[in-house]
Amino acid sequence: MIKHYILSLNPTAKHDWDQCILRDPLTAKRPDLAKLVTEAVGADTGSYLVSVNIEVKILEQAAVPHAEQLSLNVTDVNEKAQIREAA
Image (cartoon, rainbow, N blue to C red; front, side, top):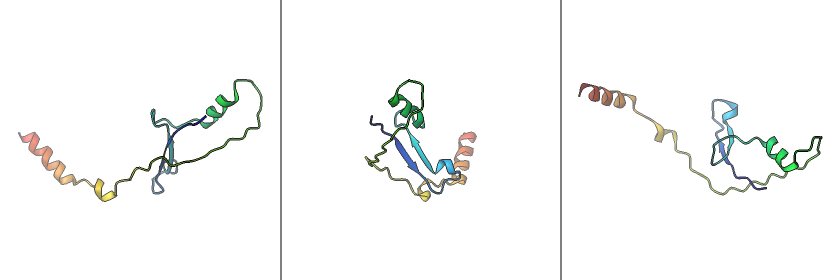
């Protein structure tokens, strides 16, 4: 079974759980890996010794914008909001 996920790495994230995020590309939900293994094994009750192969291939890498590209001048935004309110 081949599954595709989006991996987001951000070593400078504020919280540990945001540093490495694995998500489904269609639903954006985090995969339940235990459930995926259970689906592959079947529904029979019992304990199983399983081997799980994880092969990672980078299909595409999206560039992350630099912090300076994300900066927003708050005074410009406030001035524009005040101009709209005055009109």
